[in-house]
Image (cartoon, rainbow, N blue to C red):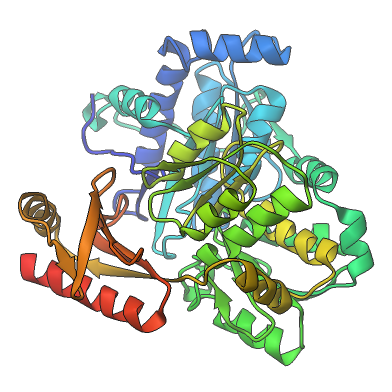
Length: 492
């Protein structure tokens, strides 16, 4: 059992040529092969997978795995390694013809009944990094149990032959598949294309040189949308930017929207599991502002009925919308895998997290940035209003919330010490306001008596302490974040 390769919440990720190397990708692929053939629940002959394909009407003589990659440096080469390795182990592989968004891979797993999928991506990390995601048969990122099994089966470097095999995507068990067109056809069935065509929208798009490049323009052109774009095409270094669909990365999209008087700007991170929105005035709108709008649209206009789930640090505005329509909200720890598990039950119509992940019923259980962007355009088209007016109308019905996220770099030992000290002696008052309740489901969420809250938790992928806060007053929010910074520095 190797111990040098560890998966985080978003898969395996690291610096190219340091931890993300050809040999390590090869080793992970071997570990995945062992997982597929030997796991008694998630593997090819496992109880869970066999029950799943029986219900879906699939039959396979050998395991099927989907493999794709994002547009980063060496992503295609690493995907070649995975294809060849899996095929050599007796696994049928369908290789994506175009760069493959993670949500499209997840959708394809469910569509084809595959035992899983590999996507070579570092998601929203900067251009110096790459990585690998394993998607299990249920159409979501590997859960903790799956990750532990894969890690356990990754061979140590010393156990490999001295010479690496030659990889060239030559195995006859590897076939190419156009998942893009399959997915977009599905999207046209669940999104009100007719309404979007009538709305005559003018939309700015920013794929951030990522996998949305082959999706945004292709789909919106067929919807009759006037499109202006930035950061399209190929750039293996992501244009030197962090492709995370946040305000800094979308500064050029913001300028484009204002300059050309567009209705809205849409974007996705590198592998499209998260979205970014620019309003008509050029302002970046946080996922906590967008998610409640999409939830109400899902209930009011799409007529969906069921439960709603959100992560611990997602806006309370979700709860207000749910309350108006007499729907139940389930709160989960941070990490979309928890929302994914609830969405899989079929009881939930909408799942959201503060970092830009949204899932809806009758699509797939995991987050999809492409779908979220199209859902926003559908909302504007069906309502017959621009985004500014929709936000204004929403504020007349519901409370206005302001949110903020700050990341503070800390060494691993400092993070451990801070969390331990908070556990022993947590603050009972923040910004001169009493703490009403402390939620330790995932880190520390201090809920104040006035309804505001601030959460402190370690990042699941980097050496960072993250501060999340929400309040109904912008000045109070800023003070709340300032106090949280002081608490962290005091405990460091």
